[in-house]
Every structure is written in C-alpha cells, then in structure tokens.
Length: 433
Ligand code: EPZ
Image (cartoon, rainbow, N blue to C red; front, side, top):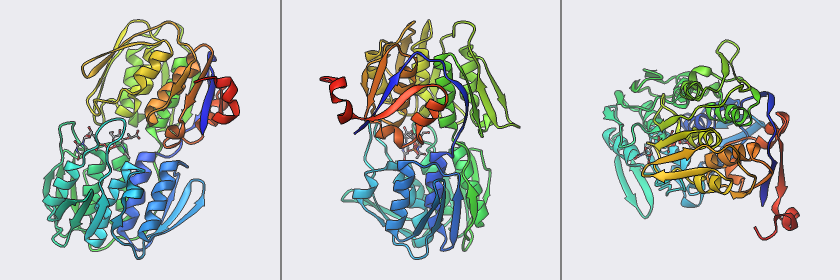
C-alpha cells in the first residue's frame, strides 16, 4: 500500500498547471450516454475516479477509448440501463448515471450509493426531481428503479436542507434535455462544473438557458449528437495548490485557472491577509510570500458561490498555523471534520463546538504518522506535512489519488520533499505505527 513521506519546513516556489475538473468530467462522461454518436472529451484529469467512470460506461455497453492520458472518446451506441452495486459502491458519483439513462432509455436501475466518511449521501432530491418529471421511481433491494415512459418537462424545485444539490442538478438536466416539453429548475446548483456540463450538453444540441444561475430552463429535443469538449480547470485542485503555497509561506503560480471560479477562496485569503495576485486574462492566480503574520478567519461552507466545502479541510490546515482563533462551520457536510483528529496528532489546537471547529493557531506543527480518510482531508494532511517540522507519513493515499493527479510530482516541482513509497519497503522506519 502506498503512502506519502514528506519532509516539511520548505517554502514552495514555482509555477504549476492545473488539470481538468474531476467534478465536471464525471457528469460529462455520464452525459455521453445521451447519444449514440461519438463524443471526444479533452483535458480530462487522469484520476482513479475517472478511470472508474470509464469502466462503468463500458459496463453499460459504451465504447470507451482512452486516446491519451487526458483525452477520451466515448460512443454509447447500444447501452443497457443497470448499474450494479459492486460497481456503484466504489464511487458515489455513479449516481449521476441516473439522469442520462432515463433521458436516453426511459429506464434506469442503479444501486443506492450508500454513505461515505464525510457523511450520509442521500439522493432524495434526485428521486423527487425524477418523479416531478413524470417518472415512476421505486427503491427496492438497495436499488433505485426508474420507469420513465411518462418522462416529460415540468417545473421542479431542487433545494434541500443543505441548499442545492450538485449531482442532483446534473441528473435533472440530463433527464430533461430529451424530455418532451419544457423543464424549469428552481434552486439549481450553479457550481462551475454544472455550467461546464451545460456547455457540453449545448454542444450536443441541447437547449438550456440560465447557465451559471440557480434557475435553468430546458426545452426538450428529440435527439442529441456527439461533440468535442475540453473540461474546465479544476478550481479545487487550484485552491489546494494555492493553499500549499500559503501554508509554507512561499510563492506559487497556478496556471490555466479561472479566477472567477475561485472568488470565495480569494476572499478568504484577503481576510487572512495572505497576499496574492490573480489575472483572468492570463488565467492565473499567484500566492505571494508573506511579510507579516496571517490573520484568523471565519469560514462557513455554502453552495457556490459560497466557500466550497471541498476546500474547508485545506484552509483549516493553513489556519492551524495562523495566530488567533479561526472558526469553520460546515453547512454542506456537517461531519466533514475527519482531518481534525489527524491534524491534532501534528500539534494543531482544534476543538469541535457543535457544527463548528474552533482552530487556535499554533506557531509550529510537527511531522507525524497520520491516516488519510477522504479525498480532501488527505489534501489537508499533505499541506500540514509540508509546513510541519520533521517527517510526516500519510497512509491510505489512495484517497488522494481519487482527486489529485500525481500530486507528489507537482509538489516536487515546487520544491517540496515528498515521495510516494511502498509501506512495506519502509516497515522498519515506520516502527510499530
Ligand atoms: C458534489 O457532491 C461533489 N462531487 C462533492 O465533491 C462536493 O463536496 C459536493 O458536490 C458539494 O459541493 C461531485 O461532483 C462528484 P450535493 P454531491 O448533492 O453532488 C445534501 C469531492 O471532494 N443532499 O451537492 O453528492 C447532501 O447530503 C466531492 O470532490 C440531500 O440532502 O453533493 C449534502 O449535505 C466530495 N439530498 C448537500 O445536500 C439529495 O438528494 C450537498 O450535496 C442530495 C444532496
């Protein structure tokens, strides 16, 4: 089993290009089911989740060709409608197959995804939306069974107790683009990844208005065609790299990003008095060396354009090394604090107060053996290891590989001393841990 070994205490410096967004590529892959023609998708990140979705599409009957590390050709000529538990349980985002299968085949049978460490992952809003669009939806033996013969456009409100739903919105859009009539979605998610999915669908011939807003109007068409699309840059990977620069006090330029998709993070950097530059024309954000102490912040995660829950853990690592009291409240996934006990092992001073974490900034963090638990918590531990004094070992970094392409290599290019090692190869070094 691979683990990361990090020697902390070095300022990161340099420039790095950000890859395509995992959370746009996944629904876009699913959307290829809406046509029997060939789709070419470029700037796809080379991640285990993407490879898994490709396997899932092939299982459903699509021809999936990996043209190169970041380009796929997908042709969903003859596909069937059933996604089994043994596949779906490996990746929750498989749930975004529901919409396109119903749109194309008027039928879908998908295993319920189950929960994960960041909390229960309900899909009640997905099912409510499909029923509003005229589908018969049953949950039997752990499967969602959708009979979509009656699929038609309608009005639906997609807001839930935590605000909008990203993959729920993706599913409703993908069911509606081939539904007769007009669909109006209120309280739609407006994450940039949803906007990119809509751009992809428009290239296929879909008729969608209100891109980037919480209100979408979709006019159903009879069929969709293949197209060629390049996935938008990953704002979460970009934010993670910017925060790696911030926590080490270095200077990192992330290129091929869209600063307009990162406003909440940039606003938090400003509140923390972490200097940065951003240039939309040059598609870059640069975090600069800090000549004075950072300031503590209050972070509340919210649907876009609020502060993204996917950057909460990484920002907390930075604040664990920032004098003063910072507060983190999770409005999206209340349990998303698996990184806290591991940060405590590294000398952080964090206490949980109800739905919030109170972070009392330390002046030092210490390298330690820690355990990754989910994708973004893993990234938080990497950042803490980069700034910690001594050696940090991070086990179960397969979590990291789900959302970051060769992160250790990018960080090495920025001056970090981090390597991916086989746990067995350093058994003696690890001792009893
Ligand atoms: C997407 O998950 C992302 N994943 C997540 O990124 C991200 O954290 C999340 O959106 C929020 O931005 C992908 O896009 C593949 P939601 P999703 O439906 O769509 C509740 C990462 O690290 N809810 O927007 O599953 C839900 O419990 C991953 O890259 C319902 O109550 O999230 C949560 O509290 C982690 N009922 C909130 O809404 C529903 O039917 C937001 O969930 C659906 C969701």
